[in-house]
Amino acid sequence: MGKGIEGKNIFEEEQDKQLFYALIKEILSKSSMQLYAWCIMSNHFHLLMQTGKTPLSTFMRRLLTGYAVKYNKKHKRSGYLFQNRYKSIVCDKDEYLLPLVRYIHLNPVKAGLIEFKQLSGYKWTGHREIMRGDGIIARDEVIGYFGKKEAQAKREYDDYVKEGLDLKEDFSGGGLIRSVGGIRKILELKRGPGQCYDERILGDGDFVSGVLKQIEEEQKEKIFKDIDEVLGVLSKFYQVEAEEIIKSRRARVREARSVLIYIAHEYLGYTVTEIGKKLKIKQAAASIAMQKGECVVREKGLISKLKSKL
Image 1 (cartoon, rainbow, N blue to C red):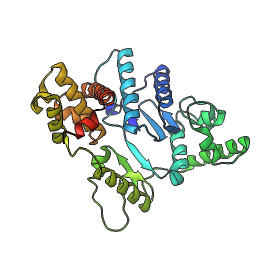
Image 2: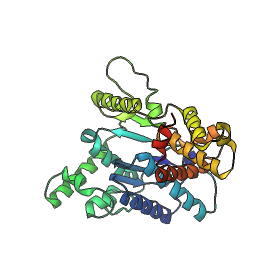
Image 3: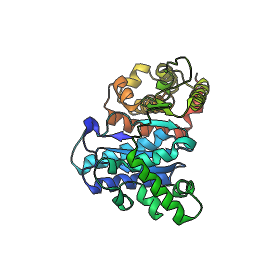
Image 4: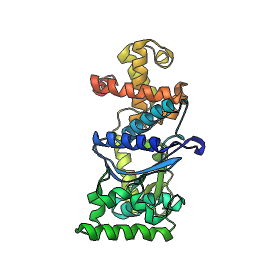
């Protein structure tokens, strides 16, 4: 989920929504991710996705940065468009896929924008795509939960969504976890007695425990401990002082700083906002530098080279 800064609109007109939708479609086509539900409102959006080889952070960075640049240019504005980092929830697919599909697709109805009978023709949720059989949603998997015969499955899906009109689904029970800080924040979790619950995962206690265990195991294998260690390694590799990497504008040093920003985000779980504050640069500049850093890391195979400097 992503929101406009200070609750302001991020989609002023239908052309803005179409641009955002086109970006989702384009980035999806180049990834291994599956989209099960989506909704575009005036000041926020929802996406229900299954990640593959493409990290969610990479997908969202390309989507949010790409849209913000185009939106700002079109509307002749500058500055931040989205409120902090997007909110992400890890959920138990077996238990929560369909309730989340329903919750997301009912957004415009519950907001009073349209009536339910208009939802199957409404352009800005994935409900229409499921009912009509086109679009960017992994439709077959969603509709498959309701039967093998197309017409019957569609009716049962539509009835299921309609039942949600009388429900207050906020998913505050179980193990709802809204992650605003990536792995690093999850690892700061304070566990209490009894079952394990956290506000960044949606599932029962066993599912939450399993996710956290997997994250902890991945952390044990992580290459870098913290930003200071990355700075030290980059200092050796680029043969410049660590302080210079943070402050200098020389081309070679700028490359090192871009790599630092990329590694801090992808390997250490820092948000773009946090990185910007730490390096005393604007969020937009940090985001652009991170994309450059990603290209450098991949083109030069830097991670394995940097490991040898540890």
